[in-house]
Length: 235
Length: 115
Image 1 (cartoon, rainbow over the protein chains, first blue to last red):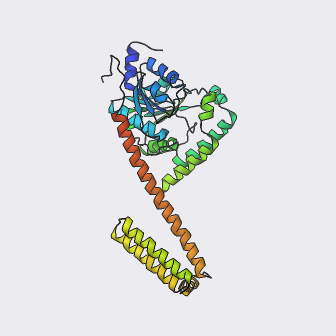
Image 2: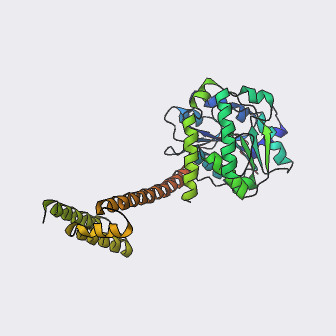
Image 3: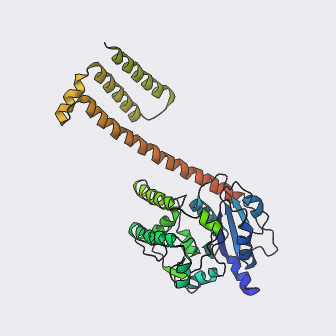
């Protein structure tokens, strides 16, 4: 963990964490981010557990949707807020603790060097990360990669990784209208349309029983595709 | 007049009345509704009319033609409602977002970011 000057530098890195019903784990997800000196934007998407009472007491920017809108909407709220606060970089970080806070620097590196506008985390760039993915999930992600490639024209190694980093300029070009999980595909489409330079970086995923139970079941993948297709018809 | 013709015409009249009394809309909408109501009455009064039209376009019975057209019409209405729902959702999202940002709880730490 870094302290002192780098810690101050991290202030201009806004980590957006969309949260829905993560009461039991949210504190342990946010604390390491706070400790590293990031500006944390916690967006509670109208949780009906004790998430909000935990989040609002932490030293983070606490935002709450009055009604549940979905992860895509929560991310967009966080990004809009962060841009308004003058963020230099914006990071998407999952609330369930499956991302490693140390990987944020890994994602920011190509952005700081000016080599990319957006950096995406991937579970498929290192053997160890790949093997950590449960078998059925791995197959699903492989299929998702193909679907995403066809729908968005971007062939990424990891279809649905919520760990992303943007420069301020790149984030300003993203406007998520897909409130629910189809935002993950929408975001790729918008990146391509805005001709943003992408980089993929290896990031580890910690699969916990909780995140697995909450994660995206097969049925969701089908819903996402339907959402994306309907979106094509109704602008 | 058969009882069924009477019932249909009353129902048609009721729907048209409800439309004009409860829903406000543009001139074109009103004309379309009136046109459909008139068509409905005509089809009820002269049942053979639909069969003649059906034969013209290559469908055996008037009822079948009517059935096909109804399905297309209903699908169209579903799509209209769907896009309306999406618009509403977008407005609600915008509202919730603005409200959430306005009511942000800011961390009270001494080195509040200045950049």
